[in-house]
Image 1: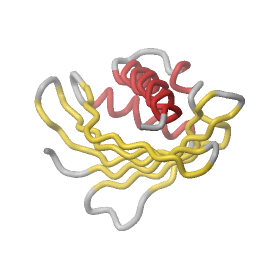
Image 2: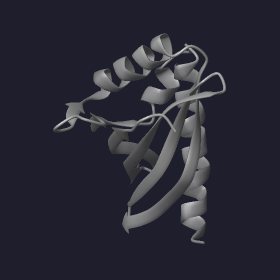
Image 3: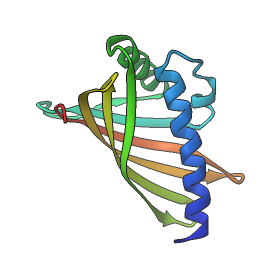
Length: 134
């Protein structure tokens, strides 16, 4: 595997750990540090006609609402793949399984676009499609 991809995936592991902190009610500052200014995302749930766009504030709101509405929220990443899309950009896709304690609640397919800026990886865009319970 590309050693640059390996280094990126190590950074991505830290990003995922910072998301878990937000899910457990922790500070969002570490998560925010990963986002590029102008970050954008889109969210869709099974049965929706089209996705809903969101920005940094919407991302935080969505995660904190999920944490408040799903007791014992935890997630598991399945099948993560990363591919370089250009010299300083990497696309990542994975399935995120969502649990309330050990009970499956739903799953999401996630696609992220990362950009390297001044030697650090920052999240530029993401798309999340939430499905029915696993």
